[in-house]
Image (cartoon, rainbow, N blue to C red; front, side, top):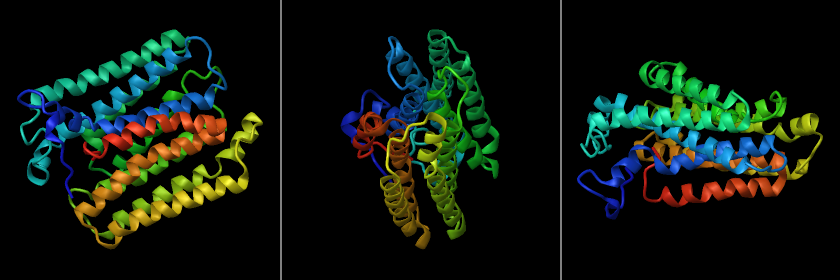
Length: 317
């Protein structure tokens, strides 16, 4: 089932809608949610200037994500012309030259925003991480995408995005920080395996493998509260409540993946991918619950609401 825009958004000959579709606008909020979770996980209280630093990190994350999906469509333009001609570039709604410039401009903006956060925070980590993410984005789109390393690169990008939110932590990252980033990265590896079948369904096995990896990411996340207690000596959620939450999330995720596994058709796979992308914010909320309790989870929820609203009109895949 192909998603379409509300054409009332059209502005000018190509239309604003085409560019919002190109950068997957709803998905940008899921990237920002990673950063909010990471920042709150490493900052027990806000200090003067933290709002600006967090805003810059969120801007860097959104710019890098938008660059990645823009360049993805640039490199996939010939394939999309055959399999998904309605996409912004093959349909002619976004000129190829403009997409090239936009992709690299967004990469530069992402690194620049992270560098500004680094300057304000007195740490080089944000700039180094953003530069590494920009390089990995280019490597993925130009080389790794069709290989077995492609989903691993996507997972590494997402884990790196979480670490970008944690990059102004005043000390070295603790085990709980690595665990949160790793769980979300593993989840995205599975999501990427499933998304590979979106345009060209390739049977059940890639979908089964992707679903198993997604659930493995949730299983890793289940260990987070205990690791937070070991590292930070705080316990924000009861064991019973936490495991019930993860069990419900895992069961719901499995139920949403099974239709695509049972009948690997494009519309079913697209719906599964859309669900998994938006559920990333739920994972961020759960992680923030383990680090900072209900208040932290609600802060991430504020980022989720625009993504949920916009995804009704703007494609997420």
